[in-house]
Image 1 (cartoon, rainbow, N blue to C red):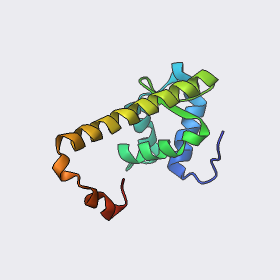
Image 2 (tube, one colour):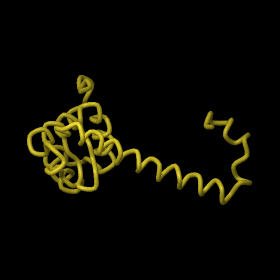
Image 3 (cartoon, rainbow, N blue to C red):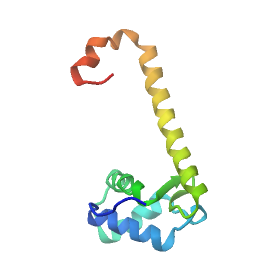
Image 4 (cartoon, helix red, strand yellow):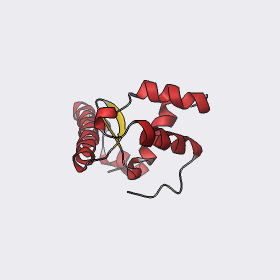
Length: 118
């Protein structure tokens, strides 16, 4: 597993909760339930802030799927977590491509050169 030395208190709280109560895909916790737990200690935490903290925890074995967030305990769970995230990324890439393809006049190469995007 990766390093957890640069985590903030929110990420530590999430990691501790997942390690203690949500080990394995079968014990996954849905996002609203995890957010409710997090808000007991960090009341101002937004859903977005929690998701960013979870993203930082990916190197610590935190996975997600349709059932929610969990600590992977088997190799197959790491692979399933990877596939889930990959499919989400490919779906977003597909949506971006459809937007571009539907409006080609808006996506001239010179526009991409301004911000370094390709």
